[in-house]
Amino acid sequence: GMEMRFVSTGSYLPEHVVDNEFLSRIVETSDEWISSRTGIRQRRVTLCEGTACMAVKAAAKAIARTDINPLDIDIIIVATMSPDNSMPNTACEVQAEIGAMNAVCYDLSAACSGFVFALNTAYSFIKAGIYKTALVIGSEVLSKMIDWNDRSTCVLFGDGAGAAIVQAAETGVFESILGSDGTRKDALTCASRYINNPLVSRESMSSDESSLDYIKMEGQEVFKFVIKTIPLTIQQVIEKTEYTKDEIRYYVLHQANQRILESVAKKLKEPIEKFPMNLDKYGNTSAASIPILLDKMNKKNMLNRGDKIILSGFGGGLTWGTTLIEW
Ligand code: ACO
Image 1 (cartoon, helix red, strand yellow):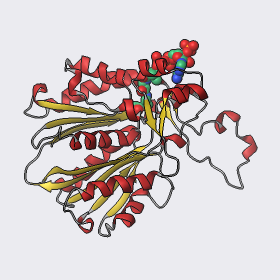
Image 2: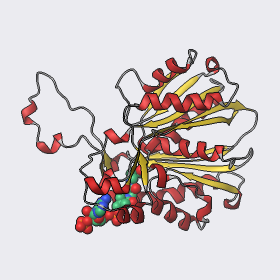
Image 3: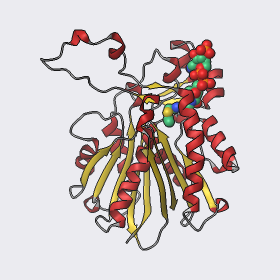
Image 4: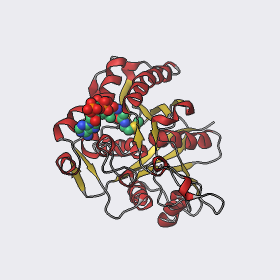
């Protein structure tokens, strides 16, 4: 079968910066607490641009950096847990805006693992010879999903979008371990609409239920899950290849928080310098965090052809995905 190569990246972040000092004026918190526990100092918050709009801007930048004609894009997958609409899906909106009329378009929901899952879906189509060119995007407006009165969550998240264009190639490296554990679904939740029809009385709904509309997180459970699962899957993915840890140039992990990444680095006995971070500026942008970081690294010329890079996402579901790629 064919292998897959990254040909371009793009990202978009809304302009408006919300710093920790601003948050300390709306909830009982402090810059000291937030920075020391999470490493986050700022996040971007959208004032009007939606999930599709930001996805379009990230995609347009990725396309502008290549000579790929949008008509050559075979598939668009948008990973998001915060779409503007239940339908049309975000990917169809991107298609219309960028003029990718030959693409099949759909969204994928896997919280913070969404981009890695979407990339693996694109790879599977390419490997099977079904498609040649894929546009894979992570885009999130998490600011509408959080309770801005809940200090335990509102300090963590940010808005943004990242995109990558991948194409069939003669050579390449792609090894993955993906996983899910629905029995731990309650660790990270955010309810969508409730069942509501003429046969169901709204009054029977408890106040508990009606307050479930925002992101809820069992922080320490999530922390323990990540520290246990991610170093293990990274080791297992590397073992599936001919490479060793020393040959891994970077670990591009979901930007949940600095302490998580430091713990993963320590468990792997790898220097923290191999774990690029930008969560200090953008917070946790869920499915968008990995493609945003990849794009920033790409722009700084940190990525060279042939580099072996680990991508790893983890989050609600629970879901996790670790992939070794060759840039
Ligand atoms: N400011 C001040 N105090 C706070 C804040 C805040 N923003 N948030 C919570 N606290 C308080 C709590 O109320 C609690 O007070 P109490 O002891 O009086 O009850 C105290 O701080 C400790 O709370 P914990 O939740 O135990 O804090 P913890 O040390 O676990 O840190 C954190 C919380 C940073 C969320 C941590 O659990 C963590 O890193 N978890 C990983 C999960 C994560 O990063 N999730 C991101 C989203 S999921 C994902 O992307 C996979």
